[in-house]
Length: 250
Image (cartoon, rainbow, N blue to C red; front, side, top):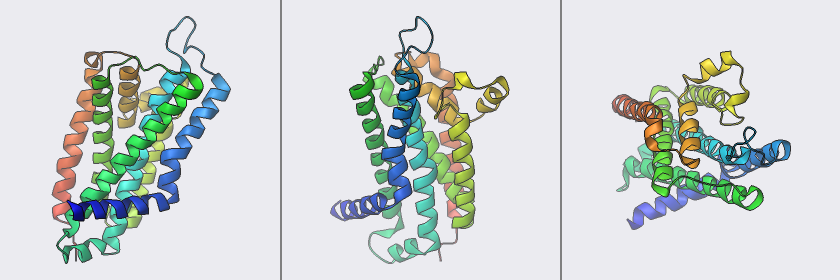
């Protein structure tokens, strides 16, 4: 465990030195929240509604944080390590490459939680957001959303033949889902053709689930989203593991 803790500490330091991951995990979502707040304030999402604009923006931007780490930071780091044969070097030590991979997952999960916590704290402090859902429901929604997007990133790393192809996959899917899922702007503002496309994106279901549990809706009303995200997690994990066995680690 001491050895694993040292690896985690090293990976955490490397994470904080990577501008893209650090900025888009801790800074950019807060800036988006402030921008949305300056435009809409904390007005109700529609006339007479108890739920306000910032109440739905915070969980949506939380999914953005999950996506940054699950679809960008983690898979791109893993692809870079493999291409530079860093995993091969670790295999020559008692730690092995699996310890490094697990440490990278743990660090990205930890930073995801930190980023979401900063968002919630900012929303509470500046806009007095209300989280109506119970802690278990919110945690379960977070678990399904995180597992699905992290497993997608894992699959992209397994599919990509090198760092360049993995970069292409990650950038394409991340930015398409970021702008069409409701993670950056409320999907109620989308025209109907865009909403139809959005319905096929996994991040859309993560946003719907997170917004629902934050608003106090029961998990039963989001069975569809949980089923889709759970099935995606299982498929990406199994397919990614199968492809990883065929990877050339030499």
